Length: 513
Ligand code: HXC
Image (cartoon, rainbow, N blue to C red; front, side, top):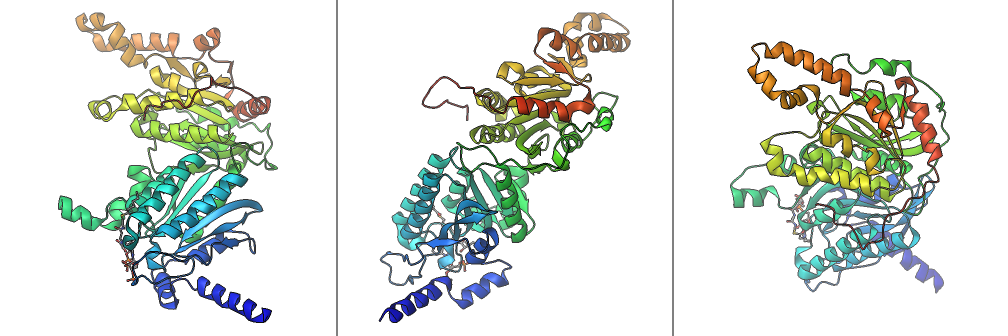
């Protein structure tokens, strides 16, 4: 009697685990894609997955839509490197991974579970979007997911892997998560596909050019990471998880570091070129100061004039924000302000200290930037630094001019420890721009304007373009030898480990979106 019942369970299990059937699984493999279950087993520790809602079926009223156990979503909980996570994966072999009422409820249920127990949620997307045959109830499901995305935001980390199509309104849930990883040539995200674009706008554009990984990593900034393939994607998720806490009430995991916290690097003094405005790679400095040179860059291909990412210093997770003089001379523009502001807000929400390295000539001028809203977007950076109450350590290594000096984690924005290298240049404007303004009349009337300009620029540089006036006024705490940057930042991080700072209570701020 019981045997029969147990046999039935085994049959149901087999049926559910067969997804859309062998031919659909074969088609998935032929496209070079893994199935939802294969993806989950790559992600989770062996034997840790507990699948829930395995026998859910759709309850749409279209008799032509076959019922499949699981209804196109594989979901549940398990562990990644021993740490609990929640996962859901769209199963493209079942009705193209389209989302209906019941599959939507499955996602909502695991998201609620993740919130209750305070663990990261990872969504693996491979879906044709809202299930057309289920009409409004499929839209209703998306609404439920969007609501949960916003409730979970800043409470538990949310990570999306785009490993297949992600079409229609379905892209908005990933966009509300903290990080999106897209697999090259497989992940696609678009609100309207190429056919609609052609019909409405008479524009021919391929899936890849419209919403592929490269397009979203370099142009829109939707993708924080590009993975070479699915295996690389799963590795990236695991690495990302290793830097971040389970929820907003925990600290990120500490790791035993083999790198000496007192290690100095005499090469740092020569990273900066002698001549101003000569480009150099800020990542050389980052890699020198973090543990074992291991820097996990976020948004590597987007707004390259600012660099953000995770690293460890003496085993402690930090978020690094640094101007990149290799691109646009490190000037701040719309995209870089958005990129850095979002990263800072993530770090602040999840108790990750922020280390800022500054070398920027200022906000990027020009009609294009002004008309596209540099005022609105640029001020997000100020907003994000001001709001952040995690430990904030800033080190000015080169130029820090004008509004960009303030924006890049200055003392007034409540940075805790502000260092500067002797090469720092802190002023309202760069020497050339400043003397053109304050000596306009003199330069205009002089027959030898070029020589005068050169002399005045030198005088200005000697007077203002150094860290000592700032140090005299206390807006720089310590002028440090470049080679000591790592130990000095680590000492500050240790001092700030138990930092408590609060802001006035409010429902929420009104960041200038
Ligand atoms: C129901 C769907 C479906 C959908 C795909 N399928 N999308 N079924 N609802 N949204 C089914 C197909 O009919 C097919 O069924 C199977 O899934 C595989 O699809 P194919 O087209 O054969 O696969 P492929 O050639 O790889 O193309 C994948 C695709 C394409 C690019 C995703 O299917 C597509 O363009 N789908 C529609 C995308 C879309 O516009 N979705 C609705 C967006 S509106 P069979 O039985 O033949 O295997 C939306 C609103 C949400 O999402 C609003 C929230 C705010």
